[in-house]
Image 1: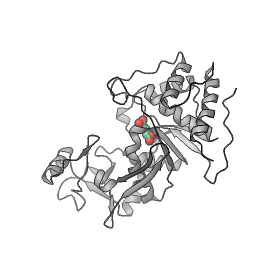
Image 2: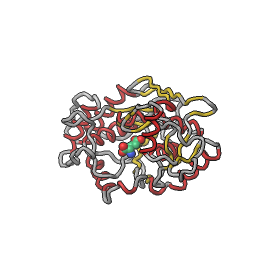
Image 3: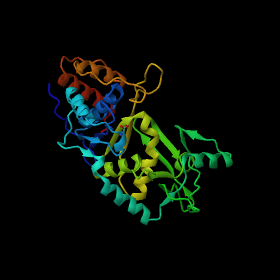
Image 4: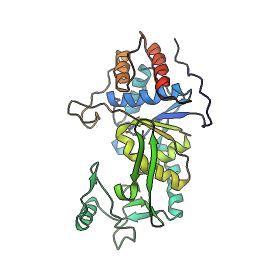
Length: 309
Ligand code: GLU
């Protein structure tokens, strides 16, 4: 058996491009392997390309050497990108700056002088105690000007011409989704107080630059999708399809992450790692003795389940 890409089913869509976008803050763990495998399978099952993008936009959080470890863990599991040199967000400042200037020229951004504390105080005084994912909904304090405060971050408007950004989209696994970004998130940061570009801006600019047609990633990121679609619409960028994958939970029921001490993947028996990840992705038990055989069988099973003609 081989793991050569399957021919694409006929469709009017642009050629499939998928990506796995790890932040090099440490080695892959069982949860990140599920995201890597799911995005790889979806790309292969569609006869598409699979890219690995290094999301090191938040350089201070990145760990030297983590990128090399991630690539060698992926390779041990047979997951090799279709591009020799990965795109690294740390080298993309000019593109983020251009996107930022464009939004600014369109009058869609404003400087914000609020500290976390100021946002909390403003919410309390407005009787708003709404909190989601430990982030505060920004109450729009600086929308009308800084009132003497020094500028810290820059935010993008989520109410344009009096109309709130209400984003609906269809997730391939989660089904219909809807978020009123203005009310549930508020105007969000695109350039942080420390001068770094926000994850939301970087992802949207890079997905468009790389021609990504399908974003396949962990369900913990599903909540970001409406913000990303909002930015795509403001900048006239194409909207990819989205598929959010099941999460691996630790013994405490929380999503497995580097922050809660997830173990780095030990790749001496990669087929076992793939079997576990495949089970989480809902694949049936597959007859395979080697990694390439397992990947080939998994690609067929994935195609049955997720590829629509
Ligand atoms: N870099 C993000 C992470 O490691 C993933 C971003 C994405 O897939 O959109 O969680």
